[in-house]
Length: 294
Image (cartoon, rainbow, N blue to C red):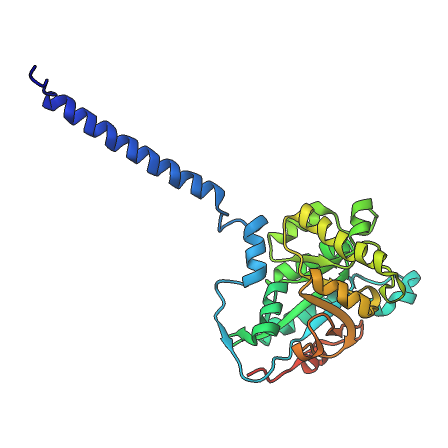
């Protein structure tokens, strides 16, 4: 029996169909890959996590020889103080003073850091090339960070980190930030890190409670904000060796209230900060944080 020959037209059609199937497969693969990868234009989620770890892609970094001294500013509240707040006077900076400080920092050429960039500086001894730098931190997660400080920060294109007492946010305490507010600010360069759940004195707290305070605050922020938490600010600057032992399991950086410039030699989990007082002038601030990081 003779073998039946397939007409040329049918062969051509079969070839075209096979080619179409290959194209469909490739397009489907590329589409799935694009959907599952983070959008580089997205400022939340995985993209935000990556930016916290690696820093801004528009900044050129360079390694320096001498150990870096990092100025970490410590703020709490920004508003006009009422007479009833006299006991907390040193924790409150008025908006005009705050703006004068940001204006001076910008004029002097300071680049404001994210937590990930601060970590890079301290661990790799790399700095933004040709720039001075400073890390702006706020403790407690007060609502005036959103209503007063945030608009001023945006005006000067400055980034800042607020260390949040997550239990207060979860309870919806008046005067504290909300998750919605934090998400909005994250899209404009603000970041949010841990200040524990209930703001206890960790130096007098038992190990089990300390562990809950340190880990539950991370879980809340990472779940609610879809961001990476790598920094703990110890409540009132108080901690002990147990705190440090627990912190090193879950955090990369620890912020104290010890006065001075931060450096790796002091320990990544016991970093100094520069306290900003209501009397801190713009000129005085620039003098206090001046370094020779070259």
